[in-house]
Image (cartoon, rainbow, N blue to C red; front, side):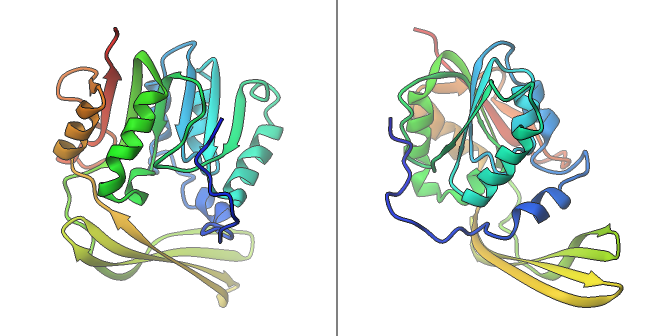
Length: 256
């Protein structure tokens, strides 16, 4: 079995952010939408999540699936997910957490449900065919594939602004974001986490990465090229609060 992980160590881009990740996504309306992916989980299937992060989606999907395999590159993200599973004895025998990364991976088996939430934006469009071919190879005939961050909105370009804040005891935490548009489908995204104690700033922790935009039509075309076609209708699904931007695609692998 090969999970596509690099044989050498790498600098974990999420080394300090997993705790903040859950803190700023604690609301019911936070994206990726837990209910969207959980409600689409077919009953009694083996499921695969690509890029599980801290397990926001995984725990809900695991409650419905027969088994769930989680593929996550970041050691710190995996550690948080494993710690959550340690507190869920009902899920321990159902969830397998593996080191691995997109776009290329090989687990040596197939699944009835493959999904990824908040992951596609990390994948350059040129790597979509490789990723989708790997997904198709891991999907059973008739199996369902769901992904979000498939958007029509322009690539973001904005001055730094506070996007959210949370309070725990004497600490106030803020999340700021800024984006520089580099092209119609690419931005450089900078997120900054700040910690205040009784109003005094005591920590500033910035992260920076590229943010890729993926449009519905080319995404559906690349999926069709590997044998994944709309599960119903045009394959688009509403996964964001923006009525003009569906945000997700739902496709199925054709039965033989």
